[in-house]
Image (cartoon, rainbow, N blue to C red; front, side, top):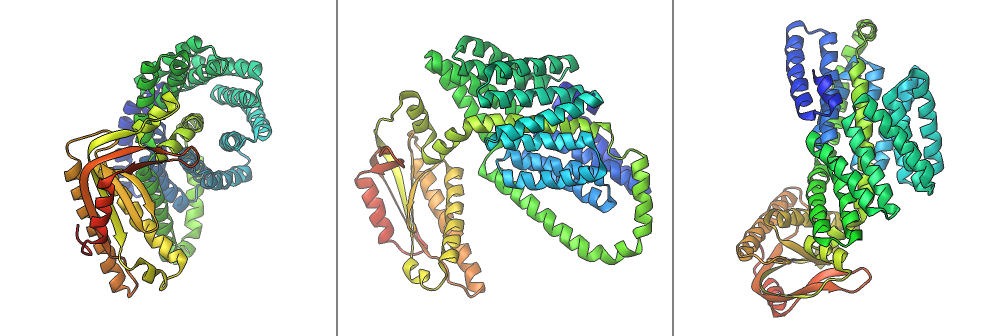
Length: 523
């Protein structure tokens, strides 16, 4: 049932059935202790990871893939190891870490080439082709997609053929050959419709909508992207929802319907931030590091046992191969994984400039800049300004290396950034070892003073904890002074190159003086 629901794009139901299957197989393994049962656990974990990946929950996806990989490595099943390595690469690709993604793809490719598994080589090659496209290597991408198309045609894999058509279409569009691009998009769409792959249908509809936006046929673009968004909403595919909202935003903006454009832009921001943020990236890194640590520990403990049991393991591997350990659906869901990587590639390319803008400016100011081409300065009557500074920073810089000093400063300011996010406070800038932020802007609110006061106390606690840790290690430490003040400010964008959002006024000056004359460790 899980397979049926997944192929239909009903990921919620698919996940429910896979989780039930995982529980059953874990109970069976507790009873019989057989490697065959353990292998089924790894297979289900991989499929659950693919469902989470398609839904945009990359931390959970990576968690399940790493658990699957650990089991497969223990059992020595090369095909399944290659599959899981490729899926882990998809997660990193989705998060924009192409170097890490390529590392996993190449490890997977090496395994499959050694096994002479053309179908699986084609799967990984498709993922590498997507990175070729991101890097502007269109000719390499086209060659790779044509190679995968030949393999899929030889084995009669309609899903793979459709995916190759799709990739070739994207490549031709990047090369400026729009006639060929539309030809391959239509061929891909027709085949996806034949096999009932709704998520893939929706994605190609978005590609066609984007195509018509480029051709300035905005009304036709709206039709295609509305179809795509309808399916994406029904199946809960966040990546396609992002792409469709971007497409609709671009079309309405070009038609001059700015209220509708803003509506879809805001929805895109909400969806995009739900799948790609600093917390998500940090969690992926922690999971990956924990896996590598556990792997090294397990290898040390089990080395002698492995030597003693090598003959038995060889028999177990043969048994797993005979039983078709990986199973057909593991490949089916890898197809889905490749599709969500392609979706992320397109949405990431379109959102990249917007992400950079939103890292520099408050969201409301960025939206105003995009819609009007400029941003007006604001007089905001009630804002709470915060300044921090480290005591004896110059003296400390003489005691530690520049690299260590910047590292400590980065860790501290990153923690401050998280506090700002927690309390809805706008970080303004850092100057040397000083950190400046303000509550109650760019959108005024009535809780800014309380929010900033709470944030300031939490920041002081963070620095104090760091101080205690450094003292126990006998290392130099930071001590912080924090000043806050409430009053009116003028806020706006400064400059036209390397511009930034800034604030001015006596309130800012008073907050700065409060900090410089304040008591260490106090607010």
